Length: 238
Image (cartoon, rainbow, N blue to C red):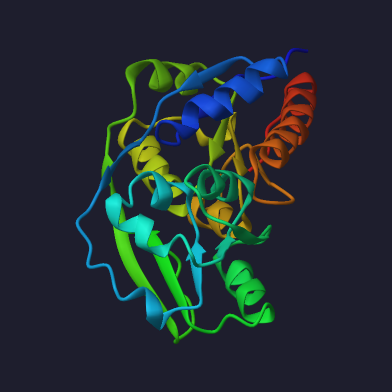
């Protein structure tokens, strides 16, 4: 049996990158972002108060604005490969690239001897221990689920890619609003906390082994095998 199609909910421009990687791997893909990302005005503190920059999203680089330039002398600890690539493209030197979320990136910075950290983040972010100064540099404006995505999920089966806990919660609200069949929807999440934010009752769930699209698509492939096997047996999984 063929694999179910993928539904991508992450905002632009990340959705296009995910879609391109998935398409190259033979997936049928529909992109339907649930958010638009927009920059926010922020108070840029004195660079001399910090010995490193902590970036937990590539959007912090994309939407940080002109004030980012004053921090280019600081080494960057990035949450994952996409964030590291965005930082390097903006002229930053990357000291570490994490693979386990914001807390792990923070731990890597401390292990490198960087205790005075400035974190640039979005409005919806994971709290970190005291001693990390966080500045909110971007926010997400919600969008309704597109009609073609609703039709795709209603017909099922389909696999939804979840890149953030905010997207997971927004998706659940859309599923409830449109009475979409959870038992025909598989969820592939970038991290365990994201999967948890979506709750239970889906056909199946899988979590990426590390926070990158390649691992997320591997999780989706495991789901596809599970879901097509379930369909061939004529049953479902709660």
